[in-house]
Image (cartoon, rainbow, N blue to C red):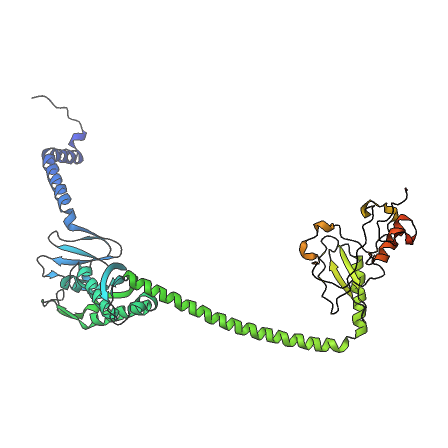
Length: 429
């Protein structure tokens, strides 16, 4: 045997207990490790069956395999969070938040038209009735209870309305009626269950309406046959056109009243003003208007009348485009035929300008050959000679006047052309 060194400290009780503990660990450590590994493995395997996580807004209904089945006591429901149960029991989760289901149903209206309605139903489960709902209906309660019930009530309500009412004006009324009718039908139907004598499985007798809270039913869309939908749209369009015409008639009535009141006001104004207006005042206003027109820079012709008032007659742009002279009315007694003298040898247009008299009125710039034909007097029409005025040039209308004009132009004696022959050539200038 090898000799072991022994110190004074080895003889203390603490050191002996420590050595005994370490000897125990060294002897049983492998067994302890094995047990821990087995326990960990068991926990990992049983964790999904033992630990249940209830999400937010949900509630868990406990079902005991060896304890009578569904626990109907609402106080033993599994609330939100992590819950531990026996691995042979099961927890069923139910959503207590607002739920929505949309479904399309076929229906027939009161006038026999087949239609399709898309209805959205919103509801919530009642917490205390969740165990009864689970036991009597199950987790598929939407397809087993809500969809058939809403569809049946929708068809029942649609049969009371025409296709036009459903499509246009009565949609809100139909929605409320479907919800109220569904609530009343669910309240009439009772559910019974529970066969145990203990508190967890006590018997119950409750209506279906006590299991869920029906919020509302919304009609999202109505699908009618194409021909019916087109006819309804045309009818609605004609209705609003008729309303538009009614508004127009009312507007015209108001407009006629307005014009009547306006006419009465104008009549009253004229009556009041006419009492204070005299002829002298009107002539004075006419003189003022004439002065203002005379000072204006616009092109105009002002003709002062010869009547009692002497008010002006205004013709605008007389220089730019002279208006054609209207043909004079034929006189009652046609004038005598006049003889035309021989044409002088010297043309009138070649006569020196100094010997011609200045016309009093401004003649138009348009030559005679360019004058429109409709402004000339036809040869067949015999018009009376115009009355000459002091400011107008007199053209020769008889043989004696023509002779006098030629003698004035040529400077010869008046009797040189008495024979009617061609006049002599004028003297050289």
